[in-house]
Image (cartoon, rainbow, N blue to C red):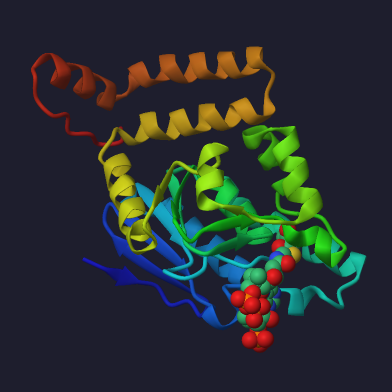
Length: 261
Ligand code: CAA
């Protein structure tokens, strides 16, 4: 069953156990206005709470992912306007989404668009995808995590090249740099991302959630803290019904049926 919630700038499809959020401002290449950010954040908060959804795909559709923050909207803003609006901070429901979130990227993923893709857990890129941080050409720098997530994934020198030149990298180069999981023909991108989402949605939800949390911890905790957090989650999972089911299903040579309890 497909259900849709009413938003103006995005489309939300729920096909339990997955959901797909599609940015939908094609005339401006899905530029990320405050309204778009608000709608994506609201949709993800709803999907977070929806027990029928275990994984989500975020896409811009077949042609473009997102060409960044809305320059029309920002051009005449002052520093105080920006601070009070805290546009980049409003991505928190996306960055903090607890279920697996897969970016399906075709065409441009630039500026804030690239940063949003980097906030997702896996990235499936169509062969038309271009990832970049052109903010320097506008007299600003990335403000939604680009300067931090690129070096943590692709290393200092690649990050410097991307930030300082503003030139995008191709899907293939992004794959070689380890910032995308798969490159596929652009017509297949969303279908492949949905297939991965369905695979992840069939796994024990608590184990998936805590595995995601543990990997993200590696980005901002010293190794000893990360290892301690991992260990606690590992022990905790032995309190779940899904651990009993997963291990007994293995021993009984059958497929496990998981409840997220
Ligand atoms: N904001 C607002 N409008 C945008 C936009 C953006 N980020 N990107 C594209 N558009 C609009 C264009 O103004 C144009 O509108 P009109 O038809 O009304 O003129 C329409 O989308 C189509 O764009 P182009 O004609 O430019 O299309 P193109 O194929 O020739 O070029 C492009 C495509 C290379 C992506 C080019 O549009 C471009 O360079 N866009 C801006 C990319 C950018 O600088 N992004 C960073 C924004 S800042 C940011 O994101 C800050 C942050 O970190 C949070």
